[in-house]
Image 1 (cartoon, rainbow, N blue to C red):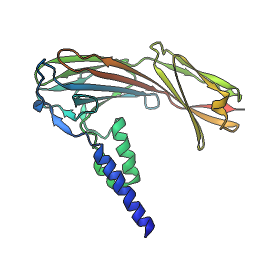
Image 2 (tube, helix red, strand yellow; image 1 turned 60 degrees about the vertical axis):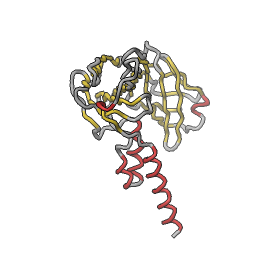
Image 3 (tube, rainbow, N blue to C red; image 1 turned 90 degrees about the horizontal axis):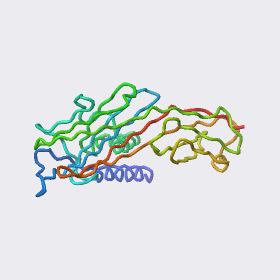
Image 4 (spheres, rainbow, N blue to C red; image 1 turned 120 degrees about the vertical axis):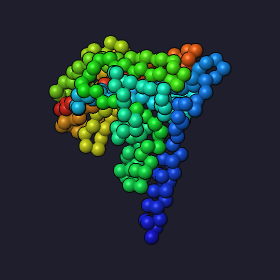
Length: 252
């Protein structure tokens, strides 16, 4: 009986948490400009390249007033194209906020009802690494905004073996100084290391929890560029992530 009550409580708490995270959605034709002509729409563009699938996921989220405001659903004449294509609205491809709802749904099936709780997002899958991804947005007043996200061409060098003294991970092509995140894993043990630039040093202390044998190495490079506010908008951010396929290194 106690276990049943506990499960019910956890489920109710999880559903309440998801509901509380609901940012809601407002149609773009209901948003008025301020006295300065600003459209009050914050633009959040994300592009994630995955080496495993050799595909890029471009995501756009518009929100009212700030990055955490109510999300905006584009209603004609407002429009968005990504690399000249009309993206999908609220597809089953999840951005960072929707992933939380996805995993909660996996653990607690009723939470699937809240999978769209983060509001309206737009997604476009693009084969390969196109290098540049263009976002063209027109608001309801006809103001035009054009931003380009750049995904660099990167390569990764992880040595096949290492001693407990540590090793270097080289990210070739990371000339823009993006943040490099490294996750080392071996069974239930893991260690996360991050830094900037083209080389990350894994120290002996980072390897102290691992036994001799294979260690999985997962590397991501991320970069954020601010879109400055102007007389027509409050700006936003362009975020790009380059995710490498896992590498294996043998600890000897």
